[in-house]
Every structure is written in structure tokens, then in C-alpha cells.
Image (cartoon, rainbow over all chains, first blue to last red; front, side, top):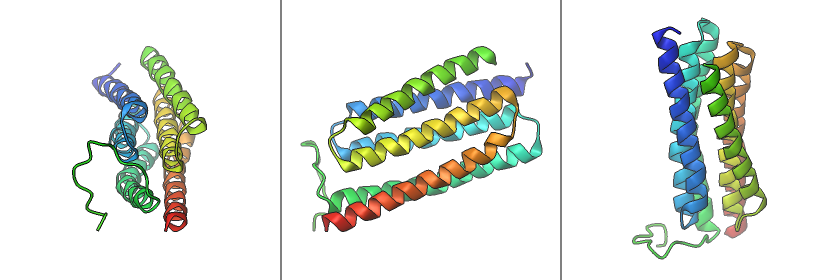
Length: 107
Length: 86
């Protein structure tokens, strides 16, 4: 195994760990908005780590380009979809945790 | 690399199963949308692990398109939810 392969394997493991974190958060966090946070941030970073790890282990330029493009799309679209989902949830009147301090969309 | 791949595949399969269970049994529509999003993320991660193991580039296209389709699905559900709630 070359050093790049080792770094790629570590990135793959890190991405998998982050995806596991996202799913644990999906089950454990108190309200919809907190769960959305869990599903967005660790999952996006997990995908990014996994795709970069795959890009480091492959030696074909075409494949690496496609993987980097997938990372770029993921990083661009994840915040947008989470924002739309949060706004839609608020419009639909989703329950909020009792620990919520500020609700700036309410007024 | 094979050991790493087996660990990653097992963990990602467990994640996808947990998300699908959440999709089946969960309180609200928003939670379903979030679970669906996470399933897509898990599948893309799994495809990345598969590419790293086999070195086969066919699935890179699949990962690219699946990421964009997951985004479209989430946007559609969010629009529908906002319109229904308003």
C-alpha cells in the first residue's frame, strides 16, 4: 500500500464514522430542527471524506474529476436543501424542543 | 484495504437500515424527508467505498447523479410541505 492509499483508507473510515454519527443524531436529538442539523452537517462531511478517500486511492484522472465534482455538488446543495426543509418545517408548524431559546421566524 | 472496506460497508449498511426503519416508523413528514436524505448520503458514501475497493469508475457517475437527485427530492418535499402548511 502506498501512503496515498493509507490516507484514503483513513478518510474512508472517517467518513463512515461521520455517517454513523449522523444516524445516531437522527435517533437521539430532541426536535426536527436539531435532527436536521445532525442529518446535514455530519452527513455532508461524511460524504466529502468518503469521496475524497476514494479519489486518493484511484489513479484514473476521469474518475477523480467525477468524484471531485460530486463533492462540489454535495457541498453546494446540502445547505440549500437543509434551509428549504427547515423553512418548510417551520411553515408546517413542526414542534420545537423545550430548550429552544429564540425563534426568529415566528414574527 | 479489504479490511477497511468490510468495516465501512458493515457500518454503512447498518446506517442505511436504521435510516430506512426511521423512514418507516417516524412521527412527522419532515422526519421522513430527513431520513430519506440521510439514506441517499449513506448510499453515496457506500459507492465511494466501492470505487476505492474495485477501482471501477462506472459508479462515479452514479454517485454524482444520486447526489443531485437526492437534492431535488428534498427540495420537492420541502416545497410541498410549506405549501400544505400555509
